[in-house]
Image (cartoon, rainbow, N blue to C red; front, side, top):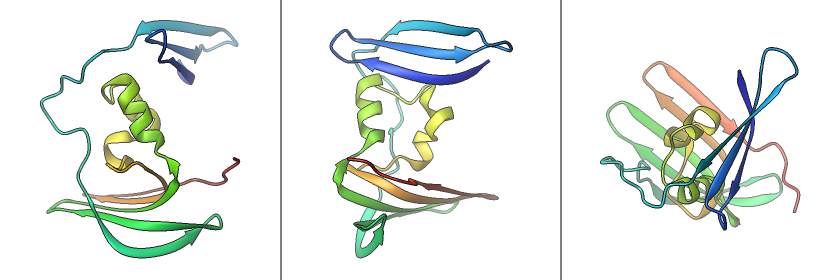
Length: 136
């Protein structure tokens, strides 16, 4: 079974997950959103802006970087678009379930801006996430 979509209703405090079965059957799972974040670890790796600017999708993006002994992430952020990562995290009060869909703990950036491109280097992994188009 694979996830097709999640719909969050903040007013009702609910989330609905739509999943496909092996046949064309769609399964629907409803759950209440948590009201508090209870994890003992930080939800984001805290990075820092370095002042660089690059154009992606005809938009000026600022560079943020995180690096430690085994992990490096470069993110190019559009400050005019709110971050989908922070929006989903604040609605769900955690990454559980979303991490598999959007790789939140690795690609999510602790900034209010939307990342348009993120490169992650972790152990033997080299992952790039790019927003392909924006319609506003």
